Image (cartoon, rainbow, N blue to C red; front, side, top):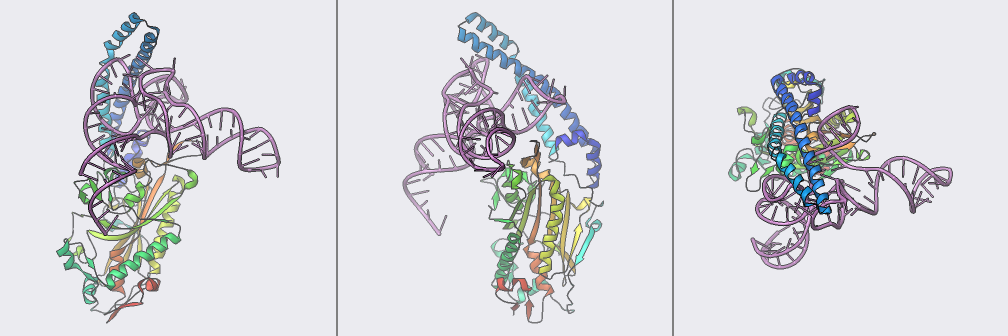
Length: 424
RNA sequence: GGAGAGAUGGCAGAGCGGUCUAUUGCGGCGGUCUUGAAAACCGUUGAAGGUCAAACUUCCGGGGGUUCGAAUCCCUCUCUCUCCGCCA
């Protein structure tokens, strides 16, 4: 959520920045400012009335203590004369507050100045390319065929148990999945991230805090009886650990990592892109989250990109790093780098990590703050990134390392997996 | 599922209709003392809105009510804890 003070002080700047996200918010901003103006005028009036009521009430207490019935009655009549004017003012003020809030939450975060202009993924800027493309034979198999050939994943069985998008990992497939999770977590904790195992369902306040509500309501599974949302990413419970917290400056930076399954309804789907592991309703992901001093967040963002990049390098996967354009960024993001790996058999780049600086967008909703040197309350910055999302990594590993009768595995997971390759 | 207790400022924990819009302790910050630190002592210290700064207003789990006045009384919801039951 954008800070009202920022909108009030720099309305034209806010409008201009939102244009980078291809949003013409001019009239929306203007109505927010008008509402705010109106609300504050009303507030002055309301507070004057409240103040008067308070002071007369105090007087009444004193007259009663002195036993002066005449004065007491006189003051009571004075209160009665204007007291009725307060509730309507109060109600009007609450209404304006609510309207203001409703408008504010519809505004996406402002993109950072480094964000390139653009509308579609084609406008994203390639920052770096790394790793080596494998040379595969003409009849190389896509991962869904490899999964069947080596009996690693059963998509049809998932259909039977639940529905499409809920694959069942079997035998070596399950073990490989577990090995990679373990490796990713170890890699993150070695870099200083604290491991958490958070709940997989969160309440409404948590879903609102990270920006999933009200923007992405339909994308989350919802347990109606208890009003719990299945997490679309562990970013939600992790970041919300610090909701409503005033963090001591010497506790910064806060660095967290977690492995969780992620649940996404993904209402929109696009035919050929949804095959195999490319797009699932349930998938595994290891996430990293940081909550940092506002002056540090961009340095930390770069660190996080490099952190994930090295992880990809250790897996020997060909990758590229994109800086997302305004049109392709998420609602809550100020700047996002996507890391993609090249799936050699599908001949396609697959997004495996998204590293984002939210600046104060999430922390403003969650009231995650610290007291600076001069004792002033300030919002912290929050960031997160996948490190890494499992299914597409698995897809690439299988496809890029396929041999006639086996699939080779990167050295870093040999010990975790217990073997150097998957045999038929 | 049954019975009971409770929710107060970073934490602990008083207050149970007006001189408290919140006692006290811990923690934090500043100082005295000290070569330095610890201890001790003194001072200071909740959040939001508002203002140049103040005044002022709001917040004692959420919502509603009674009253001139509510953290304090009533209703309601949510959550937590204890005991019992069930259970991995």
